[in-house]
Structures are given as structure tokens and as C-alpha cells.
Amino acid sequence: MRLCRLFRTAVALVAALLGAFAGAPARAGASAPADLLIVDARVYAPSAALSGSGRPPDAVAVRGERIVAVGESAALVARYRGPGTRVVEARGRTLLPGLQDGHVHFLGGALAQARVVLDGAADVPELQRRVKAWADANPAAPWVLGRGWMYAAFGAEALPHRRYLDAIVPDRPVLLHAADGHSAWANGRALELAGITRETPDPPNGIVVRDPRTGEPTGALKEAAIGLVGKLVPRPTRDEQLAALRAAVRQASAFGLARLHSLGGDFPALELLEQLERDGDLSVRFDVAISVAPPGLTPAQRQEILGARGRWSGDALAFGGVKLMLDGVIDAKTAALLEPYADDTRRGDLFWRREDFLRTVAELDALGVPMATHAIGDASIRLALDAYEAAARANGPWRGRGVRRHKIEHVETIALADVGRFRALDVTASFQPLHANPEPGWIGVWERNLGPVRTERGFAWALLERAGARVAFGSDFPVVTLDPWQGLQMAVARQYVGADGTPLPPGGFVPAQRLTLPQALDAYTINVAQALNRDADEGSIAPGKRADLVLVDRDLAATPPLELAATRVLMTVFDGRVVHEAR
Image 1: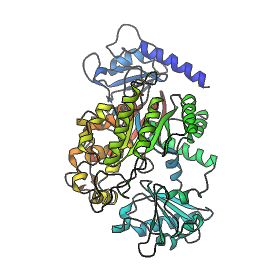
Image 2: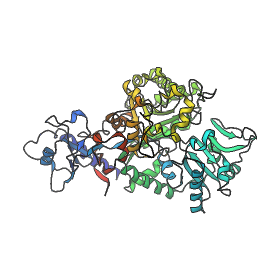
Image 3: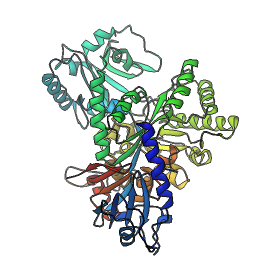
Image 4: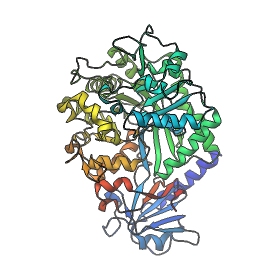
């Protein structure tokens, strides 16, 4: 099956290259018919794809898995319409390349949809209501699992307590992850099963939060301490995982997504995704990374990485490099800062010893392995840049492994001295726009912990763009929704809509860091493709590239910024196939 697909791809590519310049005005005689023509559209395409008249293109022709022409509707219809060609009238709506998400945790996110969903719960009573409703509806479930709570729901304390769970589910273990995945909330039964008491030591890179008076564990667990309970949670069956993945893939296609970079913990899911591909249910491509933890690369991991790169090298399912974690999050004060937190003497700790991290990055870089490093605080961002720079200097240019393009994930507060280093080192600044949601329940604790000066450098998309850096976007699903249209709105507006319809905060959250609509669209398309070394084949609408297309229900350029989240995908084309079509 895979050989047949490769043959079809080769044939389609040759046909695409032969027709690459067919966007020019029609010549005598028609070309081989297209399978799909989308006409009268506002095509989001590079200026090089202008039609022969010099006007922006408004039509795209697709044959097989490739785009064969981009140009004017009349010319393409005359040249490529045949008896079996499907013609879609866009009526002035926007046609985009398939969107790409540069940071997901896909299997975890897929499974989370069937558990307790706590997103948006504003206070403890609402959290309790949702947990109890799920527990009552699933009496046979041995564990009550979920995610999505925010620190602000617990007021000034900013951390949960087991007593709130014990009051509603005393007889079954409960484990609920925070929205950011860096803290968790356990009830008394879960702590008991894990053997966590006042004498339990904190694990490396983890904190068992304790009552300051009694020393008893409160049920809040930070970072690696989550694993003390998490290791007891029953693993979902293969069938449960496959069903969750199928549903999540369908949802991704409905959002217009064509490629995802899955980071941290998802590598075993490649076997499951391969099953979806065999079943014909895979309508999104995946680059999946392996995680490497301190103190560094072991011989077994080295062999696993080399083996994965050899086995998973296709277009649909590919080894996506290595994920490294340098620090935690600002909300829980586990992100590593150059100066102390605004209301504390602590700066947060790096998860790696500097020398271990520098050595590991150099070893991976020498193998030609792309890296994505979680670095939220300015101290961890600096170390990530230092390590990438030292590795490039020590190892020289990559040969036979593409262009060296490492990523830094999140980049939530950056020192001004490090801004220009992203472009100089060709390092991608990989952001998740909805992390900058200025709703008090989301960003309030973040702002309080950083203080006003560092907040002004928070989520510095525009600052990095002006410095020539490559800014790529993603979701961090399931930390936030997989929906890229909500992220697009946040990138352009840096506001949310209040209950009465008022844009908040007035003037926007650090409005100087807003992006233009084209900048934000590039961050969801060609910039992610470049970060993953996929830009020769994906990420823009041009002849010869993969036919990944998204037709939406509006002219995006004419849409007010605070209405972009309402965008609806009318059609998603993946590898030339229509994989989603709205009624």
C-alpha cells in the first residue's frame, strides 16, 4: 500500500511540475483535467504566484495530491476543467494553505476529551460541580481523571486543596491536571494509594505541596511530583486510544489542520497513528518527537532515536526530533528567571545542570537531530540559545540532514539581549497564542508573578518578528483548544470579549506585541513548515506543492480582529482529497 502511494505521489509530482507555470493566461489547447478547481477565491499565496495579469490569484487547480496551477479563474477553468473535474465556487471567501500546529500533545489531548473537562471553570464550586457530575455519570470508572483547571480559580492561594475533592468523591482516587500540565490536584484517596504522607520527600524537579502549619500534603503536586500518583493510573486500552485518536484527527481536519508537531510523551502513539493510516482514517500529518530528560542521552536512547529516524521517515508519520524540558511555568513559579519573581525571593530552578544540557544538545546536534526545548523563563531561554549556539560552533554545518533549525517552545518572557539571537542562530520562536489570553482567570496569576516590567516583554511576538526571527504558532493542545481560529484572533487582537461584548482589556494586553493578520497566518502555515524543514513541499499555495487547502466562510482580510475566532471551515483538502466539508 505504501509503495503504491509513493508511486502515485511521484506521478502527481511530475504532473505538477509540468503544469507549474499554467497559472499564466491560457494558451491554445487544454492541459490534462484537474480533479478539483476552486475558483473565485481570495487565495492566500506568495506574491510570486501572481497571475499573468499581475493581479492576485483567485483560483487553484489540483490533480492527484498536488497543486498544478494557481492563477485566474477563467484561465484555469479553460485549461483544467474536464468532465470529471469538481469545481468549487468560493464566492470571494479566503482560501488558505493547510494550517499547521507547531506544538501539541495529541494522544493526551485526544484522551482528555472523554474525561472531566475543567476548561473555563472560574471557581471551586464550578470545579466541584463538573467533577461530581462526571463521577456520578461514570460510577464504574476506577479513577476520576481530568484536566483544565486554572490557578486563579483558587483565589490568592492559587493552588488547589484535596478537601474540595474529598467532599464530593471520597471513595475513588481523583487526579486532575492543571491546564498547563505542570501541576495536578489529587484527593485523599489518590494520595493514600500513592503512599504520599508528610514524610514523603520531594522527587527531583518536583514538589509535593504541604500545609505550612501541619506539613500534611495538600493534594497539590508540581512538576515531577505528579508522577507519584500518575504512575498508578490505569493505562487506557489500545481500542480506547484508537477511538480517541480517530475522533481527534477528525476534529483537527474540521479545523483546517494539515500537520502537527507532537511533543512529549506521544512517541508511542506513532504505532497507533500507523493503524489509522492503514485504515484510511489519517487526514493529518504528524512529526512526533522523543523526550530526553536529565542528566542526558543514554546509549539506549541514542539507539532509539537513530532507529526511529530510520523507521519513521514518511510524509504522513515522521520522527520529529527530540523534546527537552528546561523549566516549568510562571504560574506555579517553576519557570527559571534571571531575576526573582515579583513577590518572592525565588527565581525558579532549571531542570538541567548547565553542563549536562550543553553536552546533550551538542550530542544530538552532532547526530543531525532537530530539537524543541521547552523554555518559558528568560533564564531558560538564554541557556537554550547558548546550547544551540555552542553546538553549531562545535559541529559545523549539517550535511545530508537538511538545514539546522531548532526550536524554543513558549518563550513567555525574554531578556532584550537575547531577542536578536533567534535570527542569528536560525532558531524558531514557537508560541501558543492562547497562552497570552488576558482573561484574569488565565493570565492574572502570570502577571502577578512576573510584575509589570517583564510583563511588557511577555509573549513578544512582534518584538521577535521585527528582529527577523521566525515566529511559529501552535496550540499546546490539550492545554488549550486545538482550534487555530481562536489562536489567530488572540495573535491579532490580544484581547478577549467580555460578557457584555466589550473588548478587554481596553487597548489590549501589551498591544505592542500584536501581529498583523498576514504575520499571524504565516505563523500558522509557512513558518511552521520552515521550522520542520517542510517548506519545500508544504505551508503555502504554489504549483508543485501538496494540495493541502482550507476554504473558510469569509474574507479574512475584511473580518474585524475580534470576530476571527468565529471563522468556520467550509472545506479541508488534504493531499488532494476533501477530508472535511461543512454542511
